[in-house]
Image 1 (cartoon, helix red, strand yellow):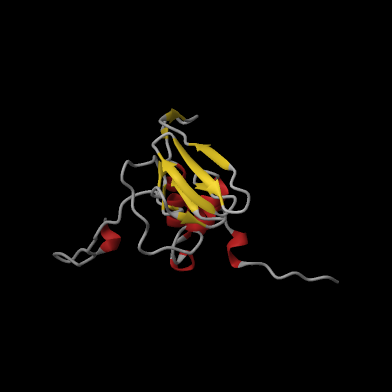
Image 2: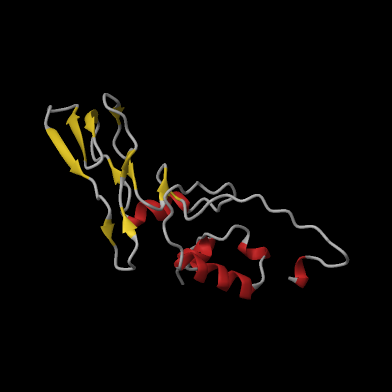
Length: 160
């Protein structure tokens, strides 16, 4: 018999794995939450989540949306439509085109924003440009909101 350990997030879908403290949530609420994440549209100024699961960076990288440096080098120019890099080893120059306001299959806007300034030295694997739903290479589906749960005139959070 061959046994293999399973990472706890392998039991759930990507949407469900992004729910913080899912083990403490009601199953129906977790199902609604994962479906709502699927329906999220990109914002013009989204924020990284304050409370997360740790999978946000991996999900963003697996989506292929952020532009990532393949080699070490130096940024020659970073415009809204392309990033030019000169490699450290052989001195070759590479121009990386960025997606600019293209329509997606879900009728949302796809675009990439450069995150590296001109003249900066970069390392392999560094984020060069963020997508519409990523900030700093992490998935960012919305804004952080300050919410207060408190009883009021005998009602509580379960009476909503």
